[in-house]
Image (cartoon, rainbow, N blue to C red; front, side):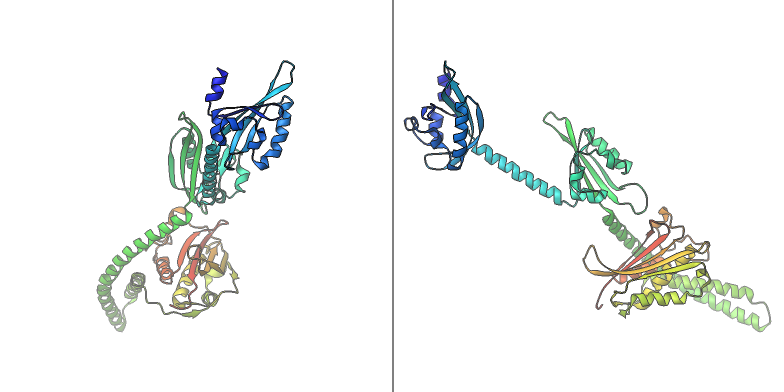
Length: 479
């Protein structure tokens, strides 16, 4: 029975005496080593071992003669001198005296297994490389809510340490800071549900928070039981801003088209009304009557004319007259205009102007219109209690295009802007000022001017309080 098994098995089977002379070889050994069985019998057992493995094999054989079982991987040599890896087991066979009389060697050719293992290793390295450099945050959690793996993009979003420092650590340390909506989605993954949450605050802490999208995928074993959860998290803050800007631009374009038509329709009859009232006022004045009611009407008509002019400026921005200009100097000129304005008596102006700004090609008058509007808005936000007006400029590199840009920031220490108003801040006619103090067109016109210069204008709340307006203008040598 045993003899038949040894002859029919596909494993290499050899037996040798204490002098290492082979006394038995099966058909599988003949096929694997490339020798007829009769040429294997009588050979030294270690003749079939690859040269660099032979020294190790000699020591192992000596250990086997001391009645020690051994197994491990060795490189074996065929008759044509080719080498193949084999998993080898060596067992001592003792006689009645207890001495080792034979050594039984069983070997398996693991060439295909090695190739398969190497392919698995390469695939794992590739997968790890992709995960490691992926721009989307990736992490996995075991059923005890401990980190199994995470990549650098995840740690960048979370604002934490290196990826290795999270491994085997509890997810609770991170979960405490996250938006509950995200935690609920991850918990649903442990229940076996694939979930997605689109464009939610990361921390849920308000202004300045990141906007993220999250997907959870339960990982199952062969019995379809959830054994881990894969989580993908993407920082969409900049993308959401771009989407909002595109929507804003589309909305402004539509509003501008409508505004232009309304302005022209109103302008003609308004001119006629103004002429009639002005004529009546002059007649009353000549006759010695009270012209004050007429002058009051004319003052309000002037205000309507100013609104119409702003509408037309917004709908049909005047062409740019570019020339090289010093941004810092333009801002200082605007502030000189406000120097004696009563609203600035309680306001301290702080300057943080970069001294390395290059002259850039812009329309100076249009940029000063932006500075005038945003500085006055900041001052009006602090008119009751006073505060600080911080004006800063610096040179930077655009994250999207990699080109140089000049950034101008105007920050106040007023009450800030309610979150519900931020999305409407550039809408025409949207204003929080009392009636008669603003038309709601100032920032809309400023936004159009910034876009016409290839730049951008954003309004938000500063983390330390108050509002902050950021104007970016690309550094161009010519238009």
